[in-house]
Image 1 (spheres, rainbow, N blue to C red):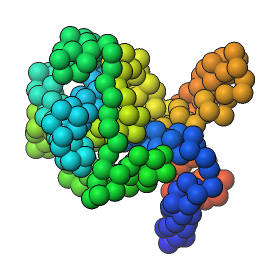
Image 2: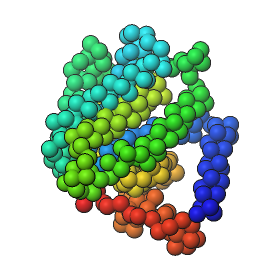
Image 3: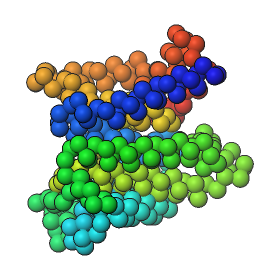
Image 4: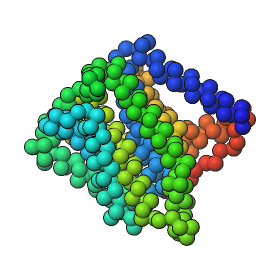
Length: 326
């Protein structure tokens, strides 16, 4: 066990140092891609808390992402709020919306819950187009660069460190959350709702909390994405974006914080590596995704945990979470 902790500590230090020095050795495009990766990690963390740990399938996270992005953009552009308050307000507003959405969805599960959240995504996307007075409709909306404590984040170099800092903080928060009472309640609900209720878990309370926290993460990611990209197009926040988010946690591994990171990296970095294939890029990318799901049915994190134990004897045999929908 001590060797395992030392190995994890050493690996964590290496990764931290690599991420801190990376912007000094790459160009602006790589910095931008990595910043996008951190944004998607935030979304994956939130969605995994809801779907992976609590067992509530959601296709509505594109809507939460849009709400966070537009809330921050409107507050920054129309109300001239400080950037830090815009991001914080976007996270809080999205969390409230997530909580309110969770209330009518308490009696739903599985495909019924997925369809309800899908409908929510379609409603939000249509509202972005119809509320042109606020969102500028189909024309899109420009977002001025963030400025915090006098530091203007108008370069990919500075944006990289901003998004990285927030992602690390929220990753630590998620880690502490799942190790506490709330995390144990989430897992109990996922495994067996009736048994969880018999043990004193308030299903309504913890389900809505899961929706709120998941929405908070996604809204925060949306706000950071707005400042990162500098422009919002309502067409980007479609049903397909929700599918992309679900794909991240399935590929990375359900009920795994490491899986959230690995899945986001897979989805963001792999297309960049395949960019030179031109017309064959989509085909090769699809084949790799299919093979990954077939040979790693419990995600990249599950495969890493299992093979690390079998080949190197590191740690203990991992407990593999149930697949989505089981």
